[in-house]
Image (cartoon, rainbow, N blue to C red; front, side, top):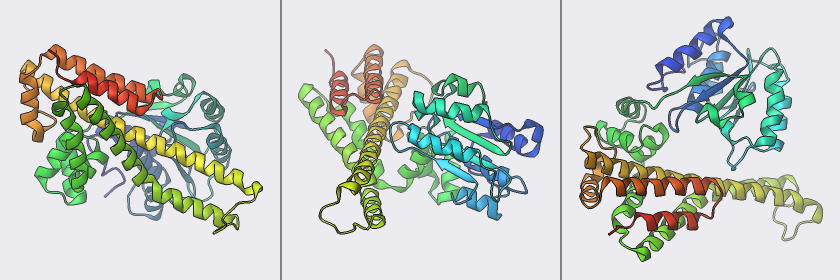
Length: 378
């Protein structure tokens, strides 16, 4: 057993990171781990952090390894924003923390899971810390691609690229780690396009499979503008409900904890001096809900793109496997009823909806425009 066991299909990247752990001359103060969603960037960063703290280079069983992987090691800080951006008020404390020597471990490690979400101001604050690092501090920055990170930070970091793992490798992980039967694991891994986290959810949660099937059903159910508007409304409502379910309980717990710490638990009205703190928390929770809703909608767009990719595969007679094997009948029906050019236009419409959502366009407007573009064309 080792900390690298769950990084399926990432042998080249693991080799680079292991070499840095074993050979001090290969070590550097800032690393940029890049790869597509689901490739395991965050898991690779955590495994690397554990290996750096471990006396045996990442055994996976010692106190250092288990506390790092469990998120409780005092010298390893994990940053995963739940807002749209990582703000300056989050970055400054990290920069200050980076100046401190490790208290127990061999290194002070700061893992930023969403380094692509630094805005210009927070990235510039981070830059100084990356330019002038203390001797025993390591920054592990994760992003989809090097281009998503400020060029000045990128140029001062060593890049390690992760790849999309093979479907079979993800399926084997689900079988080994989660006890999923092989066929379900393969279908889930293919449907998730090798995104390990999503594959695990699809394999273990029937409701997740039902929601995904409903999203894919948009491609065949939209016959006119009216259908498109209804489908868009349903999709956005589902995303809002999912985001609310994911954040509601946590929001209430956080608010109760804050009121308790302020000595105002159960109070019907708050003194003016305390309202600002409660308002700041509510604003942060609102940003988190917005991010959660965007993430749900973006995943729905990715699923739709995978369906139209399958349609195009059939239309062009390409000798490759379908992503959505359980929707093969719908794929072949769509392929027979349209041309490759129409399929590409529909894929462009889905891509444009993703761009609009990322650009803060009202979700309902972006999804409605996409759904209308998916209807059959004469």
